[in-house]
Image (cartoon, rainbow, N blue to C red; front, side, top):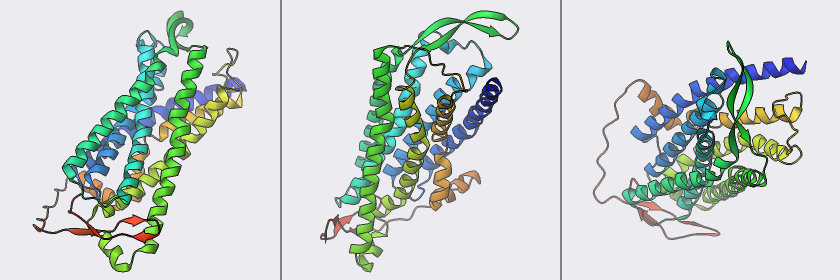
Length: 354
């Protein structure tokens, strides 16, 4: 019975991961193109962060779901199980996951700061800062992932290959050492524990800002804020941000919990990770499937919660040309009201397109 359930679950994974890549990677690429070529009702800064997130998610699916979990079933002896590719693939996989997670966190912090400030910002200068932040997040994420190179090693193991019988093939084997345990726990906190705390904290703060704005501003001020201002564009991207943050926590929390259990109660050489007769192994792999789903679902979230993105995406599919941009008035400035706890400050001005 255990053998039948093992083969059934392996078959499910063989179908699930390639299907996820076939759907998720093109969806992320379409997101990148749509965000790059259309405004989608958001500022350039917001679109840059969402483009960076789509790129990171595409790399997650490529390195993790495609190379590590899909193609390995097509080739029983893949070259990436040999040194140095075994460790390098692990670093690239972890680095792309960290980049995706921390891009969402940095974007969340940036949206909170936009709601708190009334200073006029030049779009060109702000976009340069955003690009530098995205590059920094990507580099730091891969540097943090670098120790993962040494937690797996390539070893020869006996394996029965189709049409070739019993043969020694290279395999990536987890090193049961203190260093490996320390790296895994550190990466678990970086990709799970700390991001959860930061996302919940800043999303609550953003929610408080929006609630305070709706209760403190007059109708006239709210009409002004809802015009073409930095705060208005921020509001349009915050709904997407809430959806992405909620999906991230919902889909990755099971992986965080099962990984903590595996590295505590089952962290010994005698535990067979491939034995699906043990419920913890089944739940852990189901949690991994949910984690990779998080890298493919953002496109669907954008379509559901954002009408401007949905409209622009349909225009892209129909090859409809962009509308002619309006010529802004030469001396037009829009009011933005600063939101502070317990008071409303003097209106400041922000040039359109910030």
